Length: 246
Image (tube, rainbow, N blue to C red; front, side, top):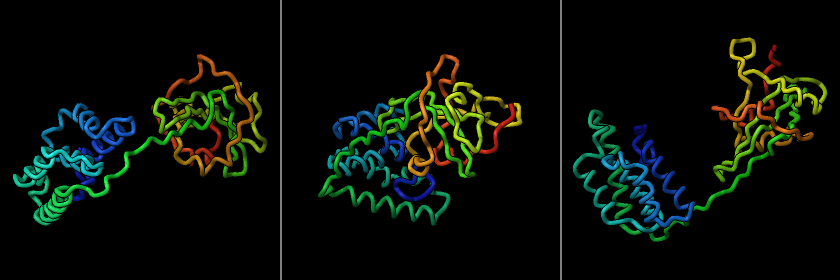
């Protein structure tokens, strides 16, 4: 983890703490409860000035900045601990110091209008397991994809496991195409014969929604792919390469 800029949120640890803090609020925890949750998650980072900066930013944003957290941020700045990364670059050190001084000044006064607690946005999976998708390709032809699974494990990011089929034709696919399970391969023509299967969440779906049509449904069997290490965007599903050779 590290910083890539001088801004408060240009830091990996800061972004992690902020994201997890807001996730805890979405789950119904109070500001104090969210603070405890990130403290447990980042026990190994409590010596890092960035951790306290992130915690202070979140507590202040939602209206309850603990005096001990403010004191820790002030002390890290006064002692130079929150500036150590920039010590070898005087111009960067000056910019970082100015950012932190402005930040401390901001959080030293109570926020007059605390932000509203974030609420989760529930995004269900787009399709059901077994849905047979006819894809209107950008080439003017048709492709095919089989929905292998749907998961709600993370309510905000409902996902589908989708396998692309080795089909490209001027005619839409029939259900027999899906029953045949001729998978497109990850790298056609190479030794990598894994089926082209991946998880798809909501990202990019609107762009291609009109190109996807459920033409029917078939049963998913025990021999079908059940997981994937890949996460794909829906935006690319209508521009698949030529069919692979089995």
